[in-house]
Amino acid sequence: MDKNAPIGIFDSGIGGLTVAKAVTQLLPHENIIYFGDTAHLPYGDKSQAMIQSYSLKICNLLMEHKCKVIVIACNSASAAAYELLKEYVGSRAHIINVVDPAVKYVKEHFPDSVIGLIGTKATVRSGIYKSKIGQQRVGIELKSLATPLLAPMIEEGFFNEGVSEQIIEGYLKNEELNGIEALILGCTHYPLIKKQIDKYYNGKVKTIDSSTVVAAELKHYLERKDILNEGSGGGRKFYVSDYTKSFEESTKIFFGEEVKIEKYPLWT
Ligand code: DGL
Image (tube, rainbow, N blue to C red; front, side):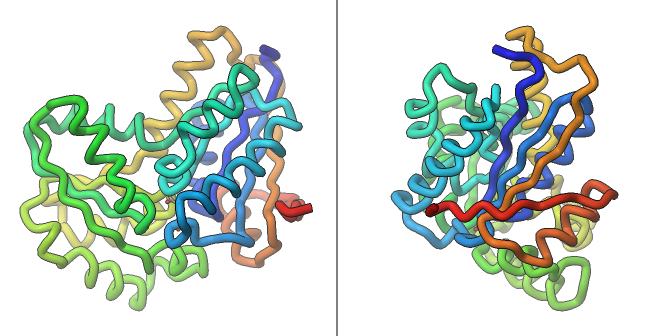
């Protein structure tokens, strides 16, 4: 495997940028190719088959770019398509999802606790967190709540303001989340509203943002395989399936620089 080969990262939209950002901070020499499937978001309301077919197309593009690792920076796609993508890609690239590193983190830091999970309908419906935490027998009780309005709201740029605060509160006061000690942000869009979630809980509940643990997992893998880019890399390329102003603006804010975004419709 070529050390200079890029890392492919994808999501339905801007959510995966939270992971891409954590990756560039931890691994500044890696070249990144990001794909935001803006034509098809939100993924959270789609069927498993639909999410799988989008994810396969994106993987094809990332493999054309000879990515050494593909990070599924989306919980909904991790839940719906990880096993399929792993099989499809085979030895051509390594696939990392966002659920396993988060589960590992929760298991290490919150054994015997009551943990909340918020995510899209697709993620919560899949039961992926419950089954993966369950497999590890650590006495964790998981309470899950689908919060389908949050990702589209964030994608439209509504965060850090009154409207979003009300919607967030409306979800978090749901009795399903009563008594939790920590909350998994089970959607990669949610770190963008972490501040508001923390404000709601006022320090009583720890919020778990998996972007840094996913980046750490990636670093660990690259080191183990001796394919860490130590050279002058650091390139970034962004693709979207449909151009949106909010994607461009968010990307600029995330990386603090002008970014070039290329449109790549998935169906051509
Ligand atoms: N950011 C994604 C996730 O982690 C998808 C949100 C959506 O498109 O519904 O689930």
